[in-house]
Length: 308
Image: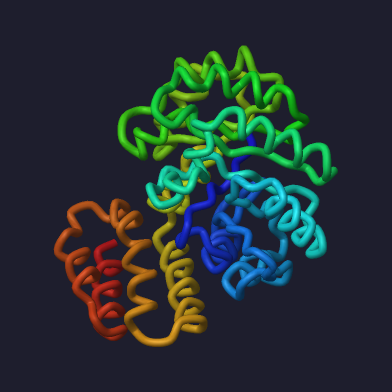
């Protein structure tokens, strides 16, 4: 089985990916959080930091582009090629209302004629490898049958399928019946994405879909960075390794953010996922959430890790 790290805006940054790659089972591919093309502008500093090769050493990194404009996509893909990238990923999955309202991400799925023309243009005018990360529709899962016929027309590197609609957001269970039909109807290599949070989730998925050889995981890794070791070797996360991982993240975020507030916002966001590794730790989680200064946060985290 191959594993990919899902792109999650503000979370799976180059800081996170580097620390993860150092301490836990490496991913076969990492994806950047989406890059939105800028008209007549180069990458901004945040985007450049995400794609700089020196920030992603040893990683098979795929930049992700969020747009519904073919010219913008092509310009951005060509700019990424100058950094050495030979593959880019098109985001057709983001369910955020601000993204969808502009007809991007999973909002683009509702405009099938425009999407078809978009894909026709980009594949006619570039030979860079293009993969797609998609949901199964904007409003209804039935939309995906038409979308598959469109995707089948073009030479995608692979299709990463998150079998929820935009309306589902991250609620409801992934629609595995639609995913089963995808495997029958789609001519591309398929990667599955969606709700692999535990080893049990992985086993259940593999039992139903033994032919699938690639999984993309996101929230499962944020909640348990040692998830792949648990899946592959039945080894629960090592708390000492988790502490080293945390400390590197914390130190590196202090190096790029000014002020306690910005660092704490980032770390609290990560703890909203990782806290599940510490059962009966609500009072410590509360201390982390209420921290307003770095010293308060450090004390709360130290108390939490002392539980183990």
